[in-house]
Length: 228
Image (cartoon, rainbow, N blue to C red):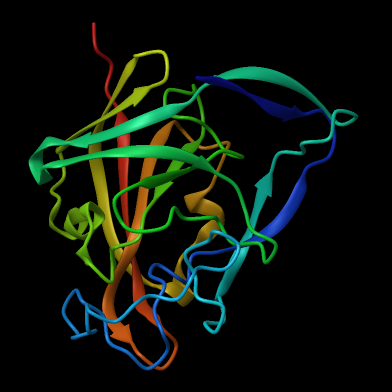
């Protein structure tokens, strides 16, 4: 379906976006992706639909612009919402849902690990400018999700995003990085004025049982491909 995204006229709202929690896990347990978190233990309910456990303090990494939703501050434009992500090289084929931010300023990430969230306050795939951000958990109590394979992607890999209208927006991977969460340049990840790109984000590195999340973020950037 199409939904309506506000476009700011004068001011925008700024808030901190936390990418710290990529899995909802009890503090003190290990992860199922390699550090031994017991997969038969239930995962606590995520607070505010963010996929971040309430006992895990989020890491606030920076400030990004969020387009105002106030009718007084904005006009609206139709947005062709992304609904599906395909990366054939990694056998990734997963649904996408639009997400916003929670009350703590963190980007909401869909529960579980089988759905990617698109940051709806930023650019959409296919927009003429800006970085469209997709994020998903690397794993959950049942095992690893599709984004766990992002660390194995190679430059040049094809990425396709299908929109609600049926359009297929094509990208090619140009950059793969794994960065400590404290060092992620959040403003660059969410840059709405940059050249058009798709940015896929998940967690990586060592599982930190004492805080309940991974040490790093895996960030894959893909540039649009012109298809005649």
